[in-house]
Image 1 (cartoon, rainbow, N blue to C red):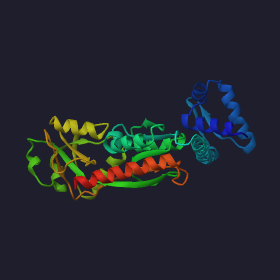
Image 2: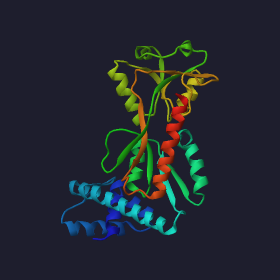
Image 3: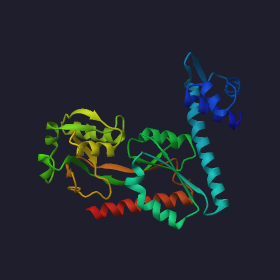
Length: 302
């Protein structure tokens, strides 16, 4: 049993297909099967259940996959961090996050970090959901994921940075635009632009509305918060969104108004990593820079 055997096995479990892994590795399906067979011979039981559409791990396979994935990710990260130490202040920091997160949460921190560390590479990998960020963090040698804080995830540490209050985005000519605040019962009588399906932010919001006994009407959903704001500005509905750092609340000027909804519990956002103790010095500095910048911007808008 070798490290390559484990890498290939974990890849097959994630892809659900031996042929897909063979294509990714540039080898034959038979070569992929040999890696799996070596593991099965060493352990003494089947690790994959093969079917017409691919393969899925057996119960024993799931146990091995979970343990191997954690170990491989930690080893890859450690090797890269050792390489960074050898090179000095010329390494890299790799971040996975949503499509609009960099602009809303990281822009100031990125500028400052780049000025102080001009030879460090900042690499961003975009995902459409928190679940996608967690999967990428666990599967790759990524350092950090910026997420909406949610339920505990095995093998991942979550660290809140901010709590974002909820606001209702409405057009400037909407009757609600002049309100100093929105009460939760008022939300039942308007047409909503829904947040991304299966997103953590939507789960937080739906749970809060259910607890308040509010059922919302909606015929529109979007892929990100920015699109929800744009549709609200165009008069296609009302967008319930978190107030991001730097936004002026109430109001935002121009054709859009942001009206606070103080009764809804704020949305926690922050960093996720495999292990804070194992973060490289550069990744830790970047994470701290983003946290300080976000908190400073949030304090300025209060």
